[in-house]
Amino acid sequence: MDGPENADATARLACGDPPAVRDEVASERVVSVLFGTDVETWRAGWGRATTGAPNREAVVDASDIARSGAAASTQVVANAGLAYTVLGRAPETERILDAVADHLNGASVGTVDLLVDDLAPVAVREGADAAVALVGGLLDRFGGQANRIAVGLSFEGPAELVSRVGTRMDSVVGGDSGAAAVEGLSAEDPTTFGYVRRHWAEAKRGIEACDRNYPQSKQVHAVLEDPETTPRTLGATLSGFVTLGALDTWSETVGPTRYDLTAYRPERAWALGVAIQTRTSSD
Image (cartoon, rainbow, N blue to C red; front, side, top):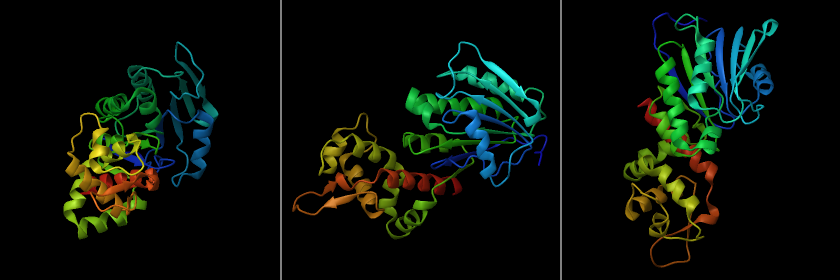
């Protein structure tokens, strides 16, 4: 299952709960970076993977579950084909990248798959910019050495990460639950679909920041900081959310449309965004 000697790594963003980052593992050697899983739980998960466990795996444990420590600690379990480095809580990005580099040292180009269990804990702890920078560092430093790079992103991560990270990937997967609805809106109302495709993450952020139960689009827009939308374009996006089943309208009004935020489905909105990015990445 080893990869070609001179090929750049293919990069994939796997979205879901849990993210299916183990799918399509093609190498007998894997380096896994953990932010939301401890080593024992991660290793046990290979039993459910369609490809089975790799012959050799190196794990960089940077999760909040890991024991804290000022210096990295590396252990080798030879009979299990495992080496793991525990970095402790909230290590700096460069420490993580250096630990990955140590485990890749000496490996032939294109023979190791690089996996990240879940980017969401990084974004929750350090912000979306830090999560995007981490992915950029992985791609820049190891894209010419690894065979495949797969990054997981669970629902807890900020919606904007789907598009910000997805644009750097060769593919985005995990939007199956919203794919049919997205395709239907694209075919039946391409204008509204265009607004949703561009502004879905901002609309989601506005809905979740608004403290009104039945706001107009301009009231949702008012809670956004540095918005890309206008009240009108945000309203068109919210209308698309209604059509796609993530939101509802409040019918007891004869004035401007009011949206029923008590009926808002955040998981649905997130899944639709993933489906949109999946569709975009395959165009």
